[in-house]
Length: 548
Ligand code: DQQ
Image (cartoon, rainbow, N blue to C red; front, side, top):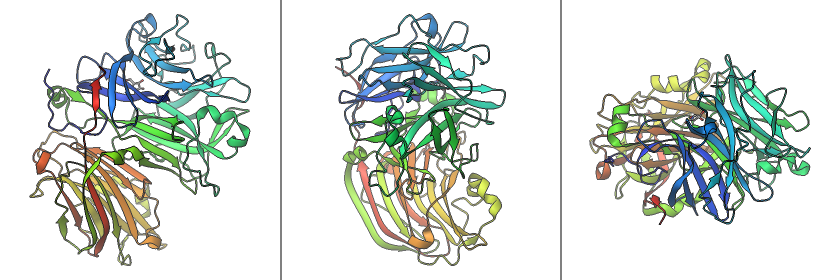
């Protein structure tokens, strides 16, 4: 089939064609980063699911290998769905995944490499004792999937979670095993919530700041049982809600003796909680990278064009740029930032500094091709006294607020930000912007928005507005930073150093290739200054060329 290259990404992960969804079993093994992902080898819509497999030395250039795990046995004949890798203390990696059996039951299977000396881990053995976990009588066999990376408890028993649902309740069902082979369900789930099915749970430790210089370093899930370390860590539980297609996480404590997880005070354990990304980002999975002692997050970004568009294009789905993830110094949220390797793709550079953008004005950042670029900007706002009145009711629904007060809606302090993937005449543009409000207790509230309302002429395309508040003290700094990775149909933004992230898919018809422009705009009354803006063209890495 033909692949339509028009809105294909340059440096975001994707195979040469067909449908992709969830990242699976990411790991680092013998000098290589491995990424598996849900893949349809036959077309650009979901189906025939197997684990496609790619490797990289640097998370930038990717080589495609043959599929790692594909339907071949009774216990996975109707599909190899999502799962995770665990690297055992011996160094042996094991993947655990959901198989769909001939009765459409979801069962959990294990596979191990045929040849441990092959850093590519090309061949996987599925032992006959699979499935290792089957839905018992208390479990709904069509809502039982996506096993996590396993961790070892102080009692030397392994533990892992499987996502599930009972009525409206989402569950992280806990299993224990002495030998990784025979798994026994615990009497209670690790955690549950009244939010519908929990897909793709992820559970991992993060270092606590506590004055240490090392709080950005990652912690290996396998290190969990180490007591000394366990005292300096918090735990993150993330779940993906299939009802809304959004993910939520909490940070909390985990009692190794009782296997209970308790979110910290202030974390909302439901669909008003915190998200890794307030845009198009789902079924994410993290892993510990021992090479650089960091935790890396992968997440899937679906298309938002139509299914006929996807069939015509011959491809659908990308992975977001891998992000380093750590706990904020105050422990109130996670922070994410594109892995440092991404900088190696930066080419031609342009910059702007100390440029005032008066209320109602805008200017183009030219002299480079922005269609595939990395933009870092710091806005300075001196006069915050005029910030609009904030209604406390808005706290629960920033997305709605952004829809009401979109980029075209004039304000006082903001909206100011970037128009990306914009046509030269601005008939197409995606706005990434901030807007500052003041509560009646005189606190300043920063809203970050991605407004794709005018992103394309194509009427059928889904154009959701995405937004969140940014946990950033603008009264103190008088500045706010934004980094946006632009990649043809991807706008992936990191507000305030990675405190608020929003990924959005857009499909301009005119603002393509060299016709895509970048602007800075200020649609508020108050002047805003671009203190500093750096933008780079991004090179195209080797993206899943087949191995020789
Ligand atoms: N995708 C997989 C499931 C998972 C869902 C199937 C989440 O295992 O629950 O492709 O996107």
